[in-house]
Length: 404
Image (cartoon, rainbow, N blue to C red; front, side, top):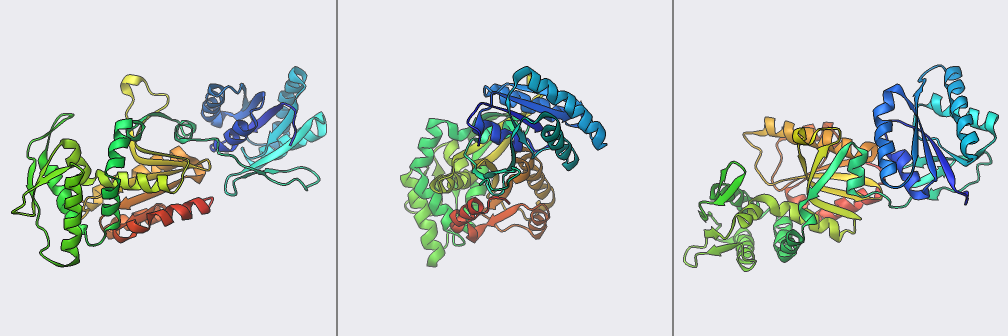
């Protein structure tokens, strides 16, 4: 690896991270972005991304996308101007563009300019930068952690707005009921019926008027098991929920409860799963874990910008894991709900994270065959009911398998 200040030359393609990661690791004095007409929008986004982080970038538009002689002639003109302007130590990032473009650029650099200091390839799957030198004995350069959730979203054309977990009060409340979240998450399948009843009761307790919510019917009745493991598990949850200040209980009627607030009802009605996953991911040591993330798409006027929300986003080793958490029963409404959930994970998740993103649907209830089949066809991993207790192992497997 050269110790002198570098100038990076990159061919722009759909996968911006292959050019972003080396630039953030090496901090070159300039980046030159060679782009065809078809990749112009991606090139503009890449230029904005780099310059926002203090790395100057120049766009070289209208690169031919076929006919190697035309590509080479165009590149030769661009590169001669770069060398005459700056006399730099050149680094070619050979990851982007078509094979034809990369081959033409390499030949032009090697034959005509004699300035080629280094050629690298961003191997995201193996978390390293490969050095493609002529002698072939250069060891790969280990990749460093340079991207967090907002960075990965921005690279995918999204703007990070906020996350529930950014708020100190949210984090404090989540920590106070961490033991309850873990009890609910690891208590399957004995708690399956209680979770369904809490979901329904919370929905009945909260009255919505436009965007406002109020606790209109705090008193609710649960049908609890009379004996056995299920009864023991349900009693433990309700006792802990009461000690956490979420509900009041009737001593004479174990199934009679009162939600203490809208937040308490929303938590017990399903948000506990989001907090459970947040806790397990943080315990697993991931670099950046955010819950309740709101984004808008770049290039939309503020008044027209539609906000989308992700239940959880995890950035680790410059890759993104997108997670949706569900506690509702899908029976009877599987078709429309399956389409919505899987389309959101597939389109938003893959758009945000690029080629090395992963998507995960976590459900506290058994999924319908239709929804499970659709997830399989889209390569969305599924965790459901009894598998929740082993969620940390799932996260560890994702961490170990450097690509999905």
